[in-house]
Image (cartoon, rainbow, N blue to C red; front, side):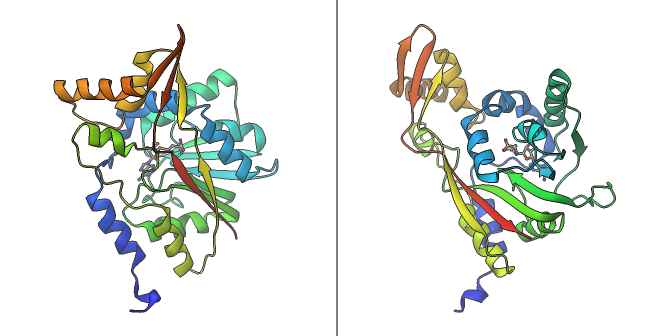
Length: 269
Ligand SMILES: C[S@@+](CC[C@H](N)C(=O)[O-])C[C@H]1O[C@@H](n2cnc3c(N)ncnc32)[C@H](O)[C@@H]1O
């Protein structure tokens, strides 16, 4: 077998078919928009992404799968303009309520999918295109090509390493099988076959996190699980309790064993 015979796009598709956490439709993301925003806006991940990205004042940035504006909002202060694309209406509502609150005028929200015709939607080429934790696509090659085509200077992607934000130990404590699906190594290999030799950095988040209450700590793990039975709910709480330490009345320290790790993939055009 030759290296060039490997069909990385197919490997991506096969691996996605087996993954446990399947969120395909925009309505799936709509339901999670508010809680996603609460957990992710102002998280340590944002600072790490921006440190590696080194935004420039004169850049126009296209943020694909922008969610509630995790990166679009802090980027708006640092660059000329941001076009924030997402197929979830509720995510864009979260974004717009924050831009209104903070008086941000240089973010243009666009409701669109990876697979829509962006030319028809009048999305222009930007200096920079980013996809942060949003490569939730069936055709990875088409998405990478599109991102590359819509950027004139640089592309930045954050893709999960191994289980990414998921905690495999949580799944096993509930007796649920867990397959995290494809990770960044498929993306990097596919880029290589497309003639793009990307630079790879890593964002590794703290394994311990402070919460204001036990309930908040339980909520921060619950998002990974769907349709919990009463028995599983108890197991989830025991799982969290076993890793939770009360610091004082308003501080609870939660420690997980598997770190959350992202690959920060970038290239110049
Ligand atoms: C994990 S969130 C990431 C949000 C943000 N970029 C961040 O890093 O916090 C994934 C986002 O991608 C969006 N998304 C998923 N599939 C999409 C698709 N096919 N087209 C456009 N957006 C999509 C979801 O609605 C969601 O807002």
